[in-house]
Image (cartoon, rainbow, N blue to C red; front, side, top):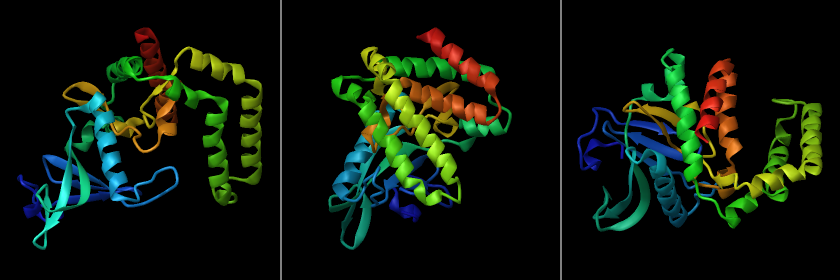
Length: 269
């Protein structure tokens, strides 16, 4: 796929390959192709071809709700006559998500760094996220992820998985105090969680709504790259998405922008 002749369309002079812990992304100029690595990280399982196909299709389905101009289709990679093809009639050996490539400078994170992210963009983001949440699916099954027992699972996993970072990124005291606080909160504030369930606040949310997953596409705020690989990360309280945005802005020392976002979200709802 690093060879221009592999693709049925014109490509840039040099194809760029970007890797994450679980994906390969190839940038060809007009289009980007995302392949899932055959890994099982516990919270994410792409270990079989069938699973990679399923999660490519899920990523397409979920992200077309907010970014259909970017997320185009799932394409098979086949092998026949000693040659790999995009599509084709040979044996399917892999799947890729085909997306429209866009310049990095339209990402909110890049706009912020260049001083181009304005109050109007954040105000529009508040309205877009509010509408997204109003349209988001919910059901008894989705709502069940708001039960204390379900929410605690993610917290307990985090505490277990971060044990190895004691003395590196945290102290034992920090871990113990944080765990004490959350355990106490779950034990004493169960009614809050039940009220959120009753108010249908547990929905199919984005799950990873930070500045790198928001862009300004043709002057419109667009959300993309939502969580497709884990229901527990996606079936969450809408406050989860809201808090992600606010956390990112306040970490950049822009509490004023987080207030604008929240006020516009509330006005829209």
